[in-house]
Image (cartoon, rainbow, N blue to C red):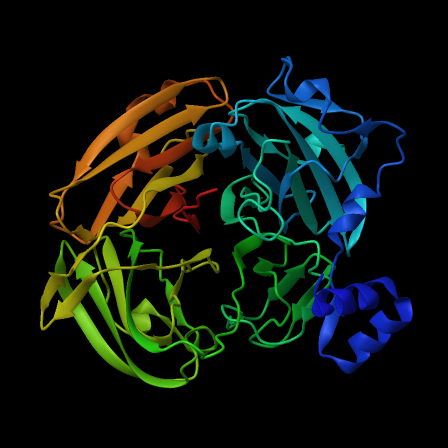
Length: 492
């Protein structure tokens, strides 16, 4: 044990030292992951020898009375903002598909309000389990602000994904008519993450309007800011006066400027719409550069139809309509900027009636040379096993896969599988070969799997698989009202 760890444990375990530390430093106390093991008053203990880890169970999700779980069982954990009225969770046991974990697991769901656990539920879950969870699964009536999922299995690799084990799932956020309006993947919480530094994190900027709230969610509580930035690490959430989460996203660390400056080129896709008018955010807290010249361009059908160089001073936060004339097509936003190390620009899919959901863009190895798009060949990098969820089929609502395509050395095309998995056991695969003629590939899932409209399922997943390269991209759910819920693709 290092001296640093010894000191941290002394501060954590002493009320007086914790109080003094918080007063002298610019920090707040965080939720303690260990508290999740202390909520149950049951005398029943589940350890790694429990028969259900290896014996058949009847249902994909089988709820059981809360019990004490042994800390010796390896686990993965994630959390997201959560409302008892207008939120749900989409869970996918990706360990079965991606890591050949074919034994049952135990899922503990803890619901918090202002840093206190108010409800806890346990479920035995089968391999490949897919399920959307909401308040009906927890008999939850009281107000809450966050939810923690922790999955236990003796065969999960210890510290999977870092942070003492990281579980990826999604929060889904609805309006009063139960229409999906925003979504975000989970964040981790390590056992030693006991204090939050109060400071300006990147992706923490949003220019709010009257009648909207800019909220900072962190596990100990949530707060509303009257400023243009939130300052505790966690999530940013923009909500309206109906407490609907119009935009949800996780914050990112402040750029420490220790890495070399590099040129970054990235793309984000926007559908053709008279109603949409997205914002572009390039945060100097994320790039680490306060003053620079950036290039923004609009690409339609591989042609550059607009481009503009802009002198950036501080944060850049502008609508596309404030930069370019009206665009009457689907289009790609291309941005080139400088950054200390790697960073992203963000796109916020605002419409004329409301703020919209947001996501960070993805790097491209295509560049603008004059009025031409030019690709640079890159070496193959890893493989792809990423996934996202499908909502139930609705007329005139669509799921889009927006993928950036790199030009890979020594191969002519990328082999890509799209694997559809449902909670009713259906599995279908669509195989594609992708050439290098364009920097971007758009897939309409409803057209790719036309039979979806006739399927009987509650929840479903699309998984992307390629052994040729690590493909980056986002998924977008576009409603008939042209409201977009968006997140980047995630691996596990």
